[in-house]
Image (cartoon, rainbow, N blue to C red):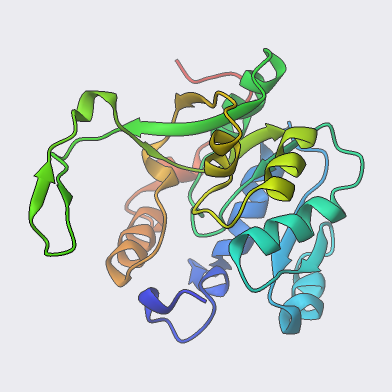
Length: 222
């Protein structure tokens, strides 16, 4: 519902330069050239409006928890061999990140997540907000989406696991290695009013470079 964003509407339908976060995310997936079909999961009362807005995709109702919604999407994905799960709140994700994840799957990985090195020093704290320890940030990554999996593995992870903050967490619980590929700074999650302000600034005419994409996103820019 995007309550932290404070936009008065579900986060995926907030607009950036005249286009919703959801529409931008779908466009990026389609522009990558590596996605055959897109399934959009939305609240039940928004299924029909989204179908009218995005007639070229499959739209299904989600569930109470995040994992319930992903399972609904998996059920609608049919006999797909590989599945990417993407958060519409990462609306500026460039098409080449979808390509990077799919290429890792094609190379033999069964679970792939994009991630960025952590710049800040992180502290682990207890219930009293006292520092317990300081993890070595060299071994940490800020994980993004799209996250890619073989469909069989992702279905098994959801069948055997509980709710998690991301699908990779369910796969990790099975003891399956998850490969990390380089993420993209533009794939940040729009969660707070500041994030939305930054996204609108990046989409404005002051930053036309965002709108310039490679003719073939499957070829990494030099």
